[in-house]
Image (cartoon, rainbow, N blue to C red; front, side, top):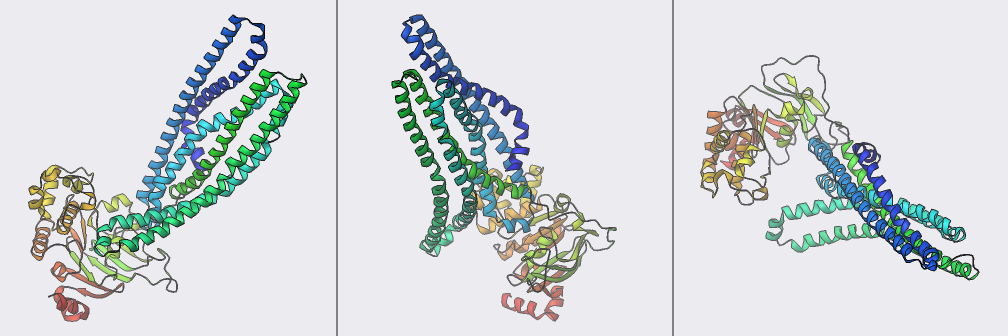
Length: 575
């Protein structure tokens, strides 16, 4: 929370000061009204001078107009500050989210990041706006009201002030107690968002398998947990308002009794008592607003801490220095690479079983490596490590003789064109899904679509390349989606092409035609093709067979058929 106030609000200190002055002036105008009314009742009206009554009535009208104008202007300024500050926070949070390493993202979880970008930033926005509006006005009304009542009747003011310490203590105690409760609530909301994402993404599968009731039970259980935590936090803070009302209303009772006695004894006047009760009502409402503000602040503190956990997270993918670049004929080289998802860069044989163990291979520029193996063998992990989505635990990876850990992420990844498993089609046109914000000409997009064997169905679509895709490409078949994704990967003519199970939905004829296009038009591109089908990789320069994260075979198709039993078994089962 400290960083929100000291860093993100700092550019707006001047605007906030002007808003504070305007709000202060407007609040003073509000405080003047009961005092003027008391003066008119006790002093002006008994003299029966109409002109003075009209003059003071005009003064009250002017004060009311000024109070309205100043408060509206100050509230608008406060809203702008809250909006601009939250925009900066949201921008930095999104930027940091985009640059988080995969290891950090796995640790925080995607639902939590979504919750921080939405619910948490909203809570901070609400707090910034309310504090500037109520946080300035309410204390001024309380303090100013007490000071004005001192000028009217010091004795009655002491009765009023006597209840203030109790209400202040109640507000502070329960607000402090609620902050960890709201933090726990936000964590539960993270899990809630995760379940919603899964259910909405897999709604067709849920319906197809008649698992609607099962998912409803899971949803109800998590929903109940969120409700319980929210109820616990809200019940804790709900004590503040009734307690504040109780003590302040008791104060009003004591003021009325004491005021009646003092008027009867001639120590005070009716107008002053009327003004005093008005001021007491103003103070009561101000104290209630302060207690409400503490509820908002409690939520915002928990949310701000969660936001800053991401913004301030250290970069675990730091650039490393190496004295010399490794001179080698190989364009890509893996040297004794070991890695585990469970412990990231700190693998211990006792703590976690590595997902990859002692992986070594090399490729010359333009060569193709086919990677095959059972599900969970580590095929996709090889691609993730090559793009440095994770850091290896042991060993090194080189591209053109340079260790990838010494290469800035942008310079490293601009070399790649990649199609991941279960990759994403965005809700945009076909052309923009291929272009992906890059400065690619229309001709380059069309060429990529042609190479990906997608030209026929794209040009037959209603609006051709401007045809809009649904979320996740729901209006495309599996094979059509894969060909759009392949076109995206090919569009910029990358140095390295990674195709991770990208032809699983293609028929054999289209798959063979695609391989012919890659060989004919991307001969200088180094390729990693991860596949389940031998037909997709059998013509590769090298084939790596993985089993349980280890290399079970390496060579050409013919060599593996001769020496690798696992590869032969795969071939026999498929062909």
